[in-house]
Every structure is written in structure tokens, then in C-alpha cells.
Amino acid sequence: MPRPPRCRRICGVPQVDTFCPNGCENTEPILLTLDEYEVIRLVDLEQQTHEQCAAQMDISRSTVQEIYESARSKIAAYLVHGKPLHITGGNYRICGGQEAAHYGRCCRMQRANMEKSGKTCKGDSIMKIAVAYENGQIFQHFGHTEQFKLYEAVDGKIAHAKVVDTNGSGHGALAGFLMQHGVDTLVCGGIGGGAQAALAEAGIKLYGGVSGDADAAVSALLNGSLGYDPNVHCDHHDHEHGEAGHSCGDHGCGKHSCP
Image 1 (cartoon, rainbow, N blue to C red):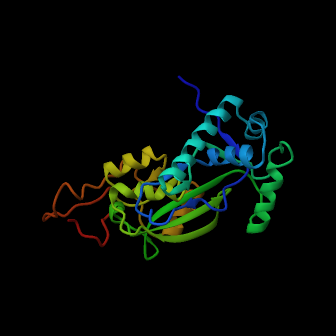
Image 2 (cartoon, rainbow, N blue to C red):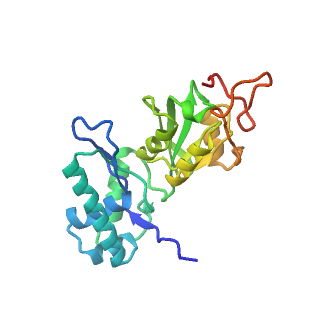
Image 3 (cartoon, rainbow, N blue to C red):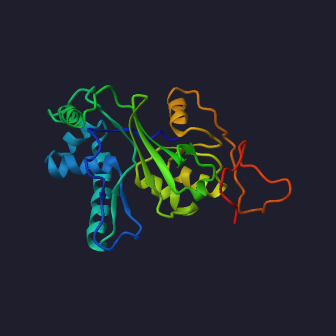
């Protein structure tokens, strides 16, 4: 078996993660990963050599070169074609101020960012969790979700939460919507096979077949007690409501109607 790729160490997440030229709102975005962003920051802004960058990110020089070329190509496409640019995803870990600093920059910068944001440096475990959301509850049909509640959890505790509108995004676009928001974990009710495949391709872990209070579900997820259905499925577009009705996984379908 091939060896899994080495996790790239980064100092912190960018303060601004979305750039959009005028009139490009409905254009497919270019996705710059956080490890690509970190290489650009270290090499082009901090003027580090590739060897220094490799030492700070705990990877090889050849990997730095590959990441750097990929990142520069994406930034060039963003400038030339006028597409939106989103910084999200990637194979990385955040040092959190706990690992040994290289060249006097990484952990000192992370501590300063944490102090400004009011957060504390306790480790490198950060999750971005989305819940299909309606009036405080977990919405039961992923493809018709009008809102997600997004949670940022640091070291197993919720540090920040907000509700965002999907602006009419349908089944096929919701995985991309979540990816643009840096989500790595989704909690929802019913969800079809196509959406599950899109989430898997985006690297988003799915906890389906969940119902009830959204905040309580996220708390249960973080403490390892969340009950979910790993085989959840929702065939809303494959049938009509009959006399016997239908179910999505092990739960009812909520208040929506099937087309």
C-alpha cells in the first residue's frame, strides 16, 4: 500500500478566506488549500527558502516545491480568469503554539492571532461542523436544506457557531457550499446516495440519520456519544408518497414535501 501523505503543519488559518472579483458571484470558484496558502505565505511573503519552509511545515523540500507550483498556478488562474478564490481544505494540522518554532515565526504568530481573537492555545485539534438546520432542529432532508448551522470546535469544545443561508443551493451544489466554508464534518437527517458521494469526494465526514436539537447533537458528536445511521438513505426522488408513506433512514422526513 502507498504511504499516506504527511500532514502539513501550518501556523494558523487565514483571516480572510474568500476573494471574489466584481460580477463573479455565480462562477465556479478556485479552491486554494490551507497548506498551499501557508507555502505562499512563507515563501513569497516571509521570504523563506524552500528548505526553511519545509522545516517549518514538517515536510520535504520536494513537497514544498509541488505545493508551491500548484498554489501559484491557482492564483494565476484567479487573476487571469477573474474567478472567485476560496481558501479551504487540504491536508494539514495547526501547530496551536504547542510545537517547537522554526526560524522564530510559527508559534509566536499563532499565539498573537489567538490573543487577538480571544482564543487560547491548547492544541491542534480543530473541527468545522455543519448541521442541516431549521428552527434549532436538525432538518431532515439534506437536499432541501435552506440553512446550515456551522460550528468551530477547538479541542473538543465549541468555540464559535453561526447560521448561514444556502441561497437556494440544491442537492448537487450543497457539498461545494460546505467545502467553501471549510466544513470537514456534516450532521444531517435523510440524505441521498448522490449527495453522499459528493460529500465523500469533498472529504467531508457524514453523520446521517440524526434528529433532534442541533446544538445537542454537536455536543454529543464531540463527546463521542452521537447516535447516527451509517447506512442512511433518502429516496425522495425515486417514489411518490403512497398509502404507507415512507421514511428516511430510521427517522421521519420532517415538514418538507416530496416533488
